[in-house]
Length: 216
Image 1 (cartoon, rainbow, N blue to C red):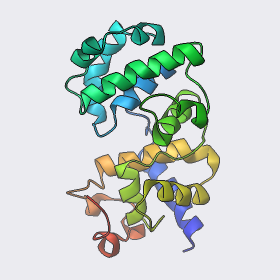
Image 2: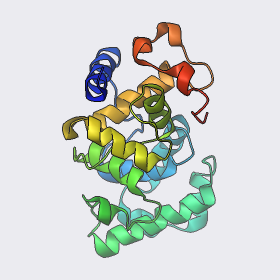
Image 3: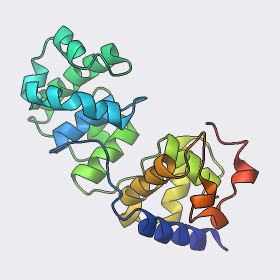
Image 4: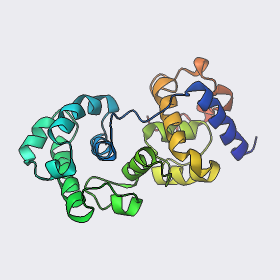
């Protein structure tokens, strides 16, 4: 099977397996998604979702957050990994949103990347899920691992993985593809205990050949 044919088969099966695949960071607007995604770096979505309701209630807008005291933000997110650095990023992000972007979340990777705490992955999350703009594919640990096991890439560097996936899948499914592979990684192809016997993609998977290459 050619790689693009395999990619199509993977996509179609994942669609059937996880028809409700979606961003699991709770948010109600682009600003909230931006803040939640910054917090999610090296932290689980579950933990972030435990913290953000109170945070968003206290700082519902970029203006409010831009004027926040550092110690108050630290207290609000102290259960999050690297909360001190992330507190600085949140305030810095909100301040630039106010001074340069009129309090609005920008809609390009380049502009989003100017914000504190924002890199390409975060920008892709925000653009794809808040604005339905597919500028790239979000490659987290789940996407990287499952893509390698499924033979969609031979790379382990997230940037190179993204480049390979972008060549295989049409632009209009890039955001959805990330969700599908993340659902696969969280629900079936679990890093330390993959449920291979239950996986509908097992005939497409090269687990035995690539397991040693995958960083778990």
